[in-house]
Amino acid sequence: MYNKNSTKWQKRLTKLQSIRLPLLITVMALMFVIFLVGIDKKKPNSQLGLTNKKAPNLDESRVLLDPTVEILNSTEVIWQIPNSPKSILFLAHGCNGRAANFWDKSVNCDHCVGLPEERAIVLEALARKFAVVAVSSKGRCWSLMKETLVVERIIRFWVKKQNLESLPLVALGASSGGYFVSMLASKLKFSSIVVMIAEGVFDRIDVTRHYPPTLFVHMPKDKRRKKMIDANLESMRREGVDVAEVQSMELALSPSFLADRVPGLDRKISAELFDLFKEKGFVNENGYLIDDGRVIPWKKAMNERKVSLPDKVLVSYIQEELNLAFAYHEMTSLQSEQIFNWFESHLR
Ligand SMILES: *[C@@H]1O[C@H](CO)[C@@H](O)[C@H](O)[C@H]1NC(C)=O
Image 1 (cartoon, rainbow, N blue to C red):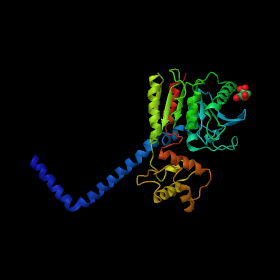
Image 2 (image 1 turned 90 degrees about the vertical axis):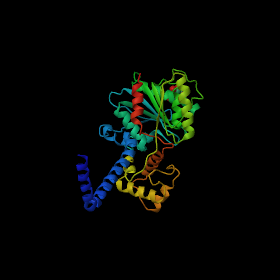
Image 3 (image 1 turned 45 degrees about the horizontal axis):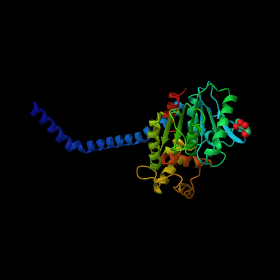
Image 4 (image 1 turned 90 degrees about the horizontal axis):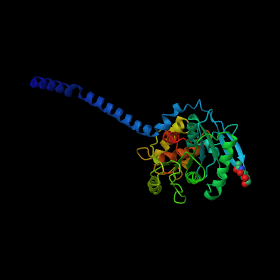
């Protein structure tokens, strides 16, 4: 049996070697390449997953960004309430941000900017039936001392005026807004909060077990901040606070990356920019950015190459997505699923 078989195989092998081996090698090499490309594609996709794959589920056609802009006591408040809301989400922007970044430019909000990550968070919130209310800080960043009372009053006033007092209140703040939300949560009752790319002000407030459940969404590449978040997670847990973290990791750029994530940017320009970034050494051989979008002279390179964008506002959209891909310090909607699951599992 064995002998018979092995002679058969030997014969076949010899035949193959003499005639078909080159073909076989070619076919196998091709299959290997396809396999590699498949893996390569899967990686960024599974990291992007939440926003990229979920985008159809978000059903943007069903959820429309349609805000109301109001000035209360000379403070800008922008809000939108879906049908049958189940909760209220307060949003706090980072330094240089404003409430107008969370909604697209429209007739109701001519100065709205619709930054990609911000608007994606609002879309997810509305799809999940959260009433969304964002406030603009007075200065460039939030003043923890002066503005907590101002915003506390605005939220209370707005909630009452909209007849939403029976709904649980949650909050999300990024960077300066993260510090702000962590402070605000010591004065105003939230059912849970999300502190994004910030360690919070937990060294300055008295954290007891009554402090709301807190999810830290952060970018561990910022090692200093990660250390402080780790310390806060531990001390808050010891106090009996429900805490958790979600890490936002770097993403590899690809020819379609910017087109996939930047509203209004087509695939052609996206691929052109990717090629330019590779050529200039802004991304390494694996497609990862070598530095933050704020640091890399990509705008200069783009102008020199005469790549023109259909709208100036796309510059800030692209910059945000480069910062997100570098994953050091940026607002992120990639973790929307975990963020809203956190809110929903703590509604009370
Ligand atoms: C507006 O300011 C007044 C005076 O400081 C204050 O009593 C009131 O609560 C404020 N209203 C809102 C909506 O913040």
